[in-house]
Length: 180
Image 1 (tube, rainbow, N blue to C red):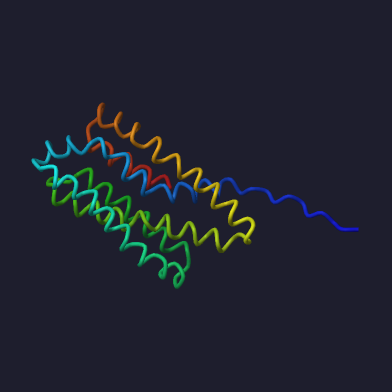
Image 2 (cartoon, rainbow, N blue to C red):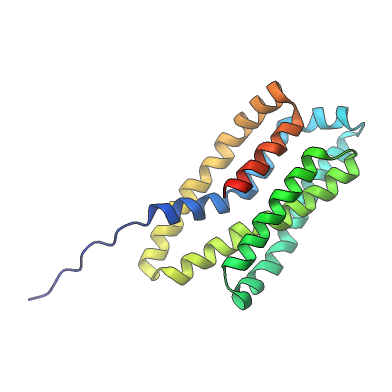
C-alpha cells in the first residue's frame, strides 16, 4: 500500500514577503513616472535630465545584481538583504529631499543598488527553501504578487503626485522599504 504524502502547506507570509521584495524595482520605476514633468519643473531640469533619473536606476539595478548574488552566496541571505533594504530606504529619503537634479540622479542610482537586493536574494531564498516542484509554484506565486506592482504603482503614484507632489512619491517608497 502506497502512502500518500500530505499536501504541502503554502507559506503565504514568506511568499508575500519575497513577492514584496521583488516588487522594489517595478514600484520604484512605475510609481514616479507620472512625476517626471513635475520633477523637471521643480528642479529646473530638462526632459533629458529627468529621464536620466530612470537610466540611473536601470544602471544601479544592473550593477547591484552583480554584487548581491555573490554576496548572498558568500555571506548568507539575511545580511545582504537587510543591507540592501536599508540602502533602498536611505536612498529613497535622499530622493525625496534632493535639492538638484544631479542629486536625484545619484540618489536614484543608489536606490536601485539597494532595491535590487530584494529581487536577487528573494529568488535565492526560494531555491534554498524549496524543492524543484515547490520552487516553480512559489516563483509563480511571487511573480503574481510582483506583477501587481506595475499595474497599481502608476495609478497610485499619479494620485500621490497630484495630491502631495512628486517628493511624496519617494516618501511613500521609503515607507515601503521600511515596512519590508
